[in-house]
Length: 263
Image (tube, rainbow, N blue to C red):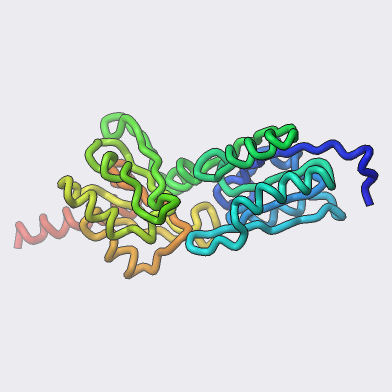
């Protein structure tokens, strides 16, 4: 039992990275090593808990698309109560706490309760997952910028930003979009983007990672035929054509065309 007189409540919001446990930062590991209690998410790799001292409580507060096991309001209250009871709370969150991670909401709630908060940024699946598949989000001559969008809003509808993004020439990265893939596809089709390359990467950076590459016209069919599902990152843009599978398919089509011309 901790002596409450010596408990110093504080919160560290730690980004766990996209899934591969080796992609957490050194600062994130040091926070785990000094934790008095850890609250961890579904998308934070369980292997990271090996850095937590043996007798420190580990509390799972995971949420996944369509399955919110613990309400955000309850997590906020739990952070404060744990900080007051134990001291140093490490809130371990998948990716980066500030990118669709609700980390800022947790920070404000804790600070309003008088608890000091520090942030440890994490490597986001936004850029890491495409990069690990040789897809750069920007490339000279192909893409000068990129959009990052949530596919599903808190109301469960498709984000209006998808429609805005579909009108640009930027690379589009959509998180939490698999449940709205048909609406996303139709939005891009409505702006003449049928031939724009698409990649869908499930469980990026993990041993069970799965990848599908096609174009906007075939994206829903491709996802269904390959069984791709959440958690997945959807990348739409000309840079996807740099993916090895896309290049191989383009070469195959070119060779078939040449063979047909000479037959």
